[in-house]
Image (cartoon, rainbow, N blue to C red; front, side, top):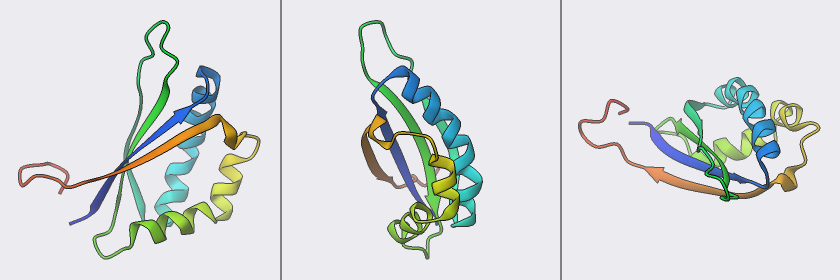
Length: 109
């Protein structure tokens, strides 16, 4: 069974979130080359006065792969560097990773 992970990126501003959304569109094929499957990418509507700008991504790794090793391979790749070109990485103020285990009846198993 694949290993699933929910990744939550917190961005500094609405503009940074908008820019990072576009970057994630480019990440998907590059991550696939490194055996990381993207199942979905979402943003959270920001309420007036709420300064939290977040992007959520649900990804998976093959059950036989070390997820951290796959991620590090992607982060050190030419694809990743090209995707991030021109984006100030300091606009990402937090990254949370949560491993998820599908239930017996989950469509993603």
